[in-house]
Amino acid sequence: MTDQDPTIYGDSLTQPFWRAAERHVLMIQHCSNCGHYQFYPRPFCLQCESDHVEWIESKGQGVVYSSTTVHLSVSTEVEPPYQVVLVELDEGVRLLANIVEGDCDIADRVEVIWRQREGIPPLPVFRRAADKNLPESIRGARS
Amino acid sequence: MNKQSMLDLDKNPIFITGAVETALGEVKDQTELSMLALAARQALHDSGMTLKDVDGIFVNYMGEQGSVQVGEYLGIQPRYADSSDLGGAAFEAFVHHAMLAVSAGRCEVALIGYASRQRSLRSRTRSSATNNMSLTAQFETPYGLPMPLGHFALMASRHMHQYGTTSEQLASIAVAARKWACLNPKAWHRDPLSIEDVLSSRMISSPLRRLDCCLITDGGGVVIVTNQQRARDALKKPIRVIGAGESHTHWHISQMSDLTVTAGTVSGREAFSMAGIKPSDVDFVEPYDASTLTVLLAIEDLGFCEKGEGGDFVMDDRLAPGGALPMMTSGGGLSYNHPGALGVLLLIAAVSQLRGEAGERQIDHPKLGVVHGIGGMLSTAATVVLTND
Ligand SMILES: [Zn+2]
Image 1: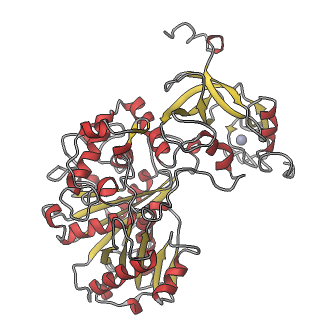
Image 2: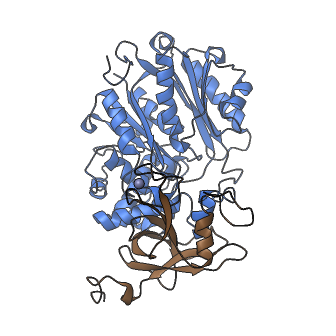
């Protein structure tokens, strides 16, 4: 762990995540001792309590675990209506996110893209996965 | 002797001797502290006591440092103080804590209280924005999920996906609450409500519509918890606290492991096992209806039906007046009042049923009531079992 750098967005544990976000790379923590993935970051593995957690690059692929379309103005960043989802990444962790470039349903395959933001790092959001990114078993089955 | 603790509630029972609402609805002529003070005086009067008898204070959300400002305002220097922060479930948790503190002799007369004027002051916020580098600010706020309704909506969507629960089933919970409210002169909404009305109300955060969501009103209440000896002075029937439990699961919605299962599974199990009861023993329930979804999950998590069967369970007016398992008997947060933390008013509603003081809303000779508070973004739960037996 490194000291918090006041010039970089994030806290001392999340700064590696946001530095990777600048390069449009989605990072999550992985335990090299037991194989557990976790997000958001902790100083050790919550599964086996090992110190051997490292940042790895997520494939940025997952499925929509749950979804809501918000019709109420609560955010300065997005105009309603907009879709908020929990994405379960293929590595097993969940992230809250928006769906962009159309709507998605629960269980749809999605992939990460990045929303540019003024003065702070880009934000991971998701869109329906391109067919080439679908697992073999699912590809072509979608209408 | 109770198996799971040094509590012996049979030999040394714990009672609620006072349970009084503050002014409700829109309160223009009082402050939060004066509202609470007036309710405290009445609740203590019903207990055959005065402020000078109070030696334990269980208060939060009344300004900085929890119980401290209320203690000063009421002129009470407690020997036991608790401002545990479990959101709307805090008041059921306070009954749990007060029961333990009184049982252990650390205080004798516990005052639990709350008052808010969040309607009049328009102080409620829907955004989760906090300090700008909290985990919430980094990973939740930018996505614009309304707090807490968007969180409930994600749970409702998942429940629908997994179990086929429908919007009509959720709406029937709001309809049941309204049927109770129609019988309650203190309820905010007293016009009849149909499932169609709920389904045609404005979409807020799908699948939840305006009428799936609770009110914002002013209000609060005070509850007095004490031991058997002190309860002998009570002017109204003391209501026995026979079980209590609490738990929490998550703060960020990404960390809630199953969106269809709440902390109520643990708080309910703890409370029911302490009380030595099973769901079929229960005559009525006061679940925290922050939305129709929170009632659905409470019913399942407390074991009144299997997980996933809540949608069927709530149909056919089962929760409504005259139903097989009355719930939200004041009209609840959906139709009666919702001053931010409904938990204290749920306790008062249950006590009034068990004393037979519920007027037109009175259930026929109830013996056993369950109060189930929730808090945060359905993050916390605390359950209390009450009896007049
Ligand atoms: Zn590990």
